[in-house]
Amino acid sequence: MLEESGVALSGSNAVVIGRSRIVGMPMALMLAQRGIDCTVTIAHSRTHDVAALCREADIVVAAIGRPHTVKPDWIKPGAAVVDVGISRADGGGLAGDVDPGVAEVAGWMTPVPGGVGPMTIAMLLSNTVRAAESS
Image (cartoon, rainbow, N blue to C red):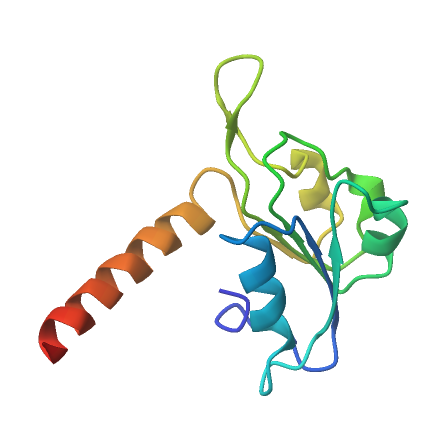
């Protein structure tokens, strides 16, 4: 999603908030791999001053499962923000890990709902077709 949207990756500083084996760690490894070449910091529940880390990042990935945790003052102006989280908000609607006000600061941001979730489904279907074709 980042590459297709024109977000510069090589040499960028990225913060991945969350270290789950399903999203956080694979995302951190993907961003750091040869050819993408981000410098990656993994933040988690024991990380001191996550907001300060995010303020220095060119890319922030939020994958923590707590609605609206990442606030606008955490984001460097123009940074790319990937909101992986989806939870029920107090009003019953869906909410991501990123406060909606971040959109006013970020240069690029995935919406919730309608961002990472549909892309996940599309990639699962694509991989299923590829697996079926190769068997």
